[in-house]
Every structure is written in structure tokens, then in C-alpha cells.
Length: 191
Ligand SMILES: Nc1ncnc2c1ncn2[C@@H]1O[C@H](COP(=O)(O)OP(=O)(O)OP(=O)(O)O)[C@@H](O)[C@H]1O
Ligand SMILES: [Mg+2]
Image (cartoon, rainbow, N blue to C red):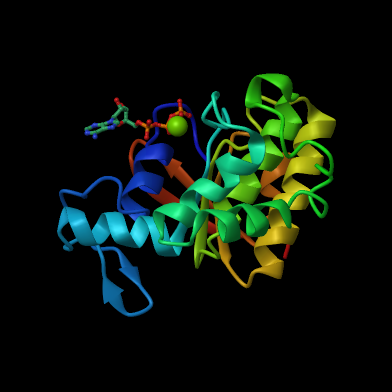
């Protein structure tokens, strides 16, 4: 958490291997990842990390199920198998029947749940979410956080969330305050 421009997204992008930090180190499971070359960082992003953004960033021309299947296919899963695996996420996320809809035909909350499925389907070790409820009303945001935390826990993955909203932060086990590009104090939050 932290004010606008404090460096939350930048920190998330450094942790996720999208940006290479000028200083400092990023470690994942004992491996230093900030020093890896672009190819290996890109492979790491595809296989170990999942991403959820403020605006779903789904591909508008693809049906919801293909949006979810796409990262699996990029990791080498055959198309039919990937779509089957993708479909298995729709029921548990309350999206049953919406598999064939294009993103433009979904509500903001539904699109965000498709983005959660897309992030989790490849079974990442860490899910990064940058203001995942920023474009949603309070009730839909609450439901999105419930599903995001539940699905991440179910997958035994870790979840790193950037938010302005204290009610979103309450879903997390630990809150870190950032201001002017620095971590202020790690505050132990409610588990
Ligand atoms: N790749 C980069 N190199 C240098 N500076 C950057 C880079 N990306 C962002 N910045 C700057 O770093 C600062 C922090 O930006 P960042 O997007 O991380 O803020 P934020 O905390 O996510 O803000 P918001 O809440 O508005 O999303 C800004 O001043 C931004 O212009
Ligand atoms: Mg940001």
C-alpha cells in the first residue's frame, strides 16, 4: 500500500521479473532472478508467475475460455487439453455458462474472475495483482478478493497485492507500506 506514484507498481514489476531493478536483488526459491537474462526471466514469468491487473487485460477477440487457455498453450499444453483445463475454472469461480463469451460481453467483475482463472490456470508459485479491484464497486471487489485469495490458497501459491483500499488489504496476511520509492515499515496485518 502507498500513495499514488510511491512505487507500488514498479516494485511489483521488479519482483515479477518484468523490470530489472537498478539496485537490490530479487530471490525466488533460493534463486536470484533479477540477474537472469530476458529469455529466462520471460520463461519464469510464464511458468512460475501469474498476473492480475486493474483492467482485466483480456484479449477482446478471444472467448473467455481461450483467454484462460492461452497461457497454458504458450507453456506447451496442446490446445484441446488447455481449453479443457481452462473450462474447469469457470464453475468454481461462478462463471459457469460464460465460457464462450467475449470479454466485451462480460461485466467488470466477471472479466476480473476470468483474469483470475487465467493467472491461476498454469499453477504459478506466485500471483501478482496490481489494484485488482480498482475498477470494481465495493461488493464486487470484495467478492473478487474472496475468490482470488481462495483460489490462490487452493493452489498453494503466494499472492502479492497492490491496493489503495484498506478493505482489500485486510484479505492479506501482511501489509507493507511504500512511500517515495521506499518500504516504510512492514506492518503485520490480520492473517
Ligand atoms: N521503469 C521506470 N524507470 C524509472 N522510473 C519509473 C519507471 N516506471 C515508473 N517510474 C516512476 O516511478 C514512480 C512510481 O511509479 P509507480 O507506477 O510504481 O507508482 P504507483 O505507486 O504504482 O502509483 P499508482 O498508485 O498511481 O499506480 C513514478 O514517479 C513513475 O513515473
Ligand atoms: Mg500503480
